[in-house]
Length: 185
Length: 98
Image 1: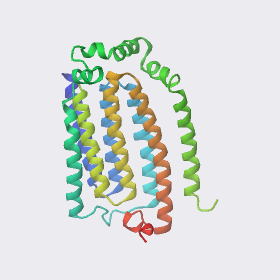
Image 2: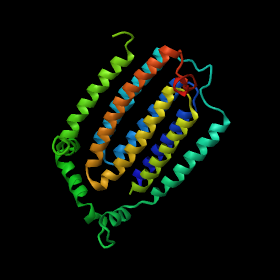
Image 3: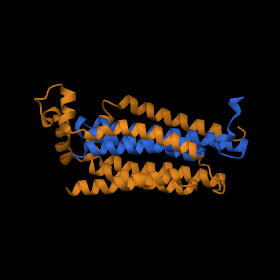
Image 4: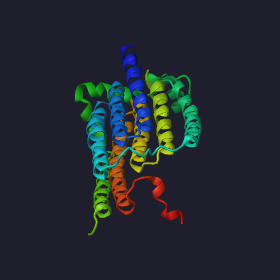
C-alpha cells in the first residue's frame, strides 16, 4: 500500500514535469524539467526493484547526458525571445496523434502478472509464481549476493559480446562527435 | 502489483514525448523529447524485468548507452548546423527541400 502511494506520487511528478518540459519556451527550463522527470523515474525504478538502474539513471542520464545538453544550450547562447513552439494547428495535430497513441497504449494499464503468465505459458492453470520462477529465484539471490552481482553476472556472461560492441559504439560516437564539431581537422 | 500502472505511465510519457517532437521546432528540445521517449521505454522494460528476469534491466543498460552515443553525435550535428545557419530552429534547416 505504501509502495503504491509512493508510486503514484512519482508518476504524477514525472507526468507533470514532462508536460512542463514540452511547453516551456526557454530551452534551459525545458532541460531542468526533463531532469526532474528522470529523477522521478529513478524513484519508480527503485520501487520496481531495479536499484542499480536507478543509480545509473541519476548518474548517467540526469547527470552526464543532461549536463551535455545544458552545455550545448549555453554554448550556443540561445535566447527565448522568439518562441520555437509551433502554432495552434500543430497543437491540434500533436493532441490527435499523441492522444491516439496514448489511448491505444494505455490499455496496457490492465496488465496483471496473472495475464502476463497466461500469455507467456499459454495456459490459465499456471499461476504467475510458477511461470516466473526464474525471476523469483533471482530475487532471493539478490538478497544474498546483492543487486550488482545479480546484474553483472549475465552482463559479463551471456551478454558479453553485445557489451563489447557497446564499447565500439561509444568509440564511434566519440570520433564522430569530434569530426562533426571541429571546424577544421 | 505495479506492473499495469507502470506500463500505463510508460504509455503516457511516450505520448508526451511524441507530442513534444511535433510541437517544438528547436532541435535541442527535440532531442530532449527523444530522450523522454527512451526513458518511457526503459520504464516498461524494467516493469517487465521484474517477472521475466534480469535480462530486461540489461537491455535498459544498452538503451542508455545508445542514448548517450546518440546525444553526443546529435548535439555535434546541431553545433555544425548552428555554425552554418546561426540558429537551431528546424525551419532554417531546409537545404534538402530544394
